[in-house]
Length: 204
Figure 1 (cartoon, rainbow, N blue to C red):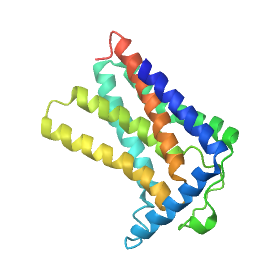
Figure 2: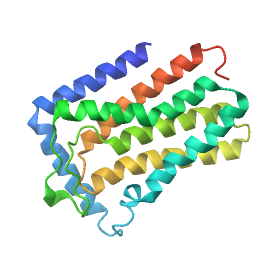
Figure 3: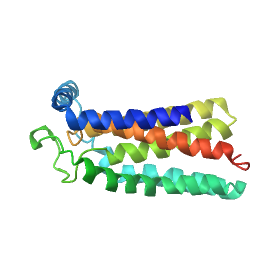
Figure 4: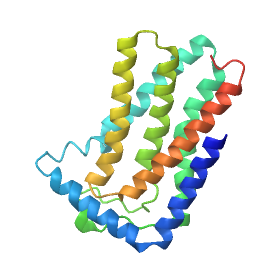
């Protein structure tokens, strides 16, 4: 529980700093410019992958595959938690963004025609991806017995989590601290879920 509490405090501190310290936003802008410059040799369709159908596929895949697995194993709490992740993260974004009211990076930074008009903090793409695929990683580590398969699946999962967050910054639609805040909040939710599962007698 100390870890869960510490993550919540860390998220609150980061949020307060973002609101009260303009220098953080200046650093965000500098990092976006730096990242876009370093990755300018790559085609634009690469960071746009999480904005196309692939993003939804990467949400549906774990929901269906693990959903079937949990139903067969009668792991109903695991099933409920897994399917609650998209809903919980969506609701948190609906609550946090209007409260913080952090603007997106300027249009000059956005190298895509998407140009979202919602608030920036936290990154919803990063939050749902971290929570959902973090849960996937935890269950793969627990249930998968094949070491090579386990390593491959966990590696792919980690790569996807990092890539989604990176793509938000790369495209200039989110500040780096928007993604960082989403990761911290996502880790908090993930630890909370896992703690409840560990305390439930039928979680495995």
